[in-house]
Image (cartoon, rainbow, N blue to C red; front, side, top):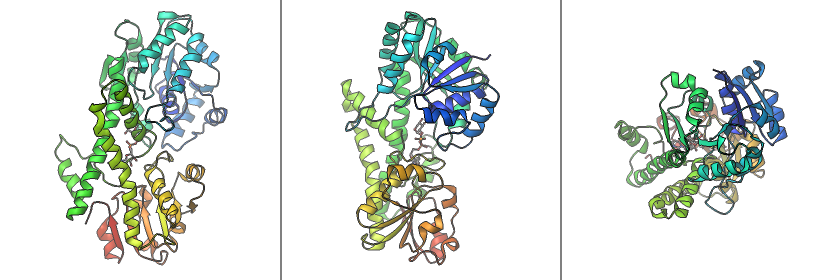
Length: 441
Ligand code: UDX
């Protein structure tokens, strides 16, 4: 059955959700306050790099199931199922999340809703937010108790956003247990196709749903910092963290995923989410419970300075060294440079006197905007020309597929540092290169 759905916020999360809900056959209206973003989306252009999303967007616009607007009045007229997908960034100078965008959606939308409706929050929010927004929405809306707020956290990964939305591992829905409403039934209609495929659907109270999301991200961040901490011990002991990760990963209680040691995690989610989680636990008087996340964050940030130290060790002195940086997105298949470990390392190297030349297949524009003073190159070869050392900091396929012959006669010194442990050490060493991985002998 087709439902009329409004998706508010058309960033990574909202644009993907809107396009994918239309792909499930629903009629969808995307809402955003940014006119330039809307103009692009209306023209079938995705304002960021996400494999597969442009195709899904275009086919649904063409089929007449998807359009966009800046008008809340139009949104309130359009349907009675709303998904809230605006950002909750880290507050300036604090650990806590900035929830002003979610608050402002409720302030603007609720007064315009006059009949039964459900607002499903998808954004990652501090636990307790959904209950607070629900109370505020009922207060502001002429619909009163007939306007419900439920929480349906999103687990999509950038670079796999379409796949993760249309084939999620699970669907989680938090509902207000004190008010028996329609939220669960509405969610079952919206996600009928996915539920028909047997995707697990967990219905919880609001607080649990909010915490599922923050705990999942905290667990993933912990797993990465765990292996990075072990990689420091491996380095001290002359052991190989990549083999160790394979070996412990065979234990299916542990699992091999998210055990890739390197320069650590970045992006718009994991770093700020663990910090917001700590801040919220503190507000709730449970700060002791999450002190380990401080260590997770510290280990992660230490990877970036450790990488700079490795480069210094390779070239002797950073002053005047020519460093090729391959990759500046926070991970491959994304143009996102928010809290990118690669860009942070490139910036530190430049501050310490190195001449840095950065190339990334997709993230150059975003990097230039965020870090205009870095040196940029138009290709891998241009970045590597005359380099004293080549760094692979984001494991894009085209960097993983590099072979020594590609860089023959291009670099000044045959040195390569593998910040993501994504290259074959033997291949490079056999060709006369100095190969340096992280946590490997
Ligand atoms: C993450 C969560 O995975 C997703 O479920 C949530 O909805 C949003 O946050 P994302 O930020 O897109 O998704 O990226 P993810 O694939 O989780 O990678 C995060 C960072 O960890 C990247 O910088 C990546 O390079 C790094 N990482 C990942 C490692 O350093 N090692 C690993 O083994 C895995």
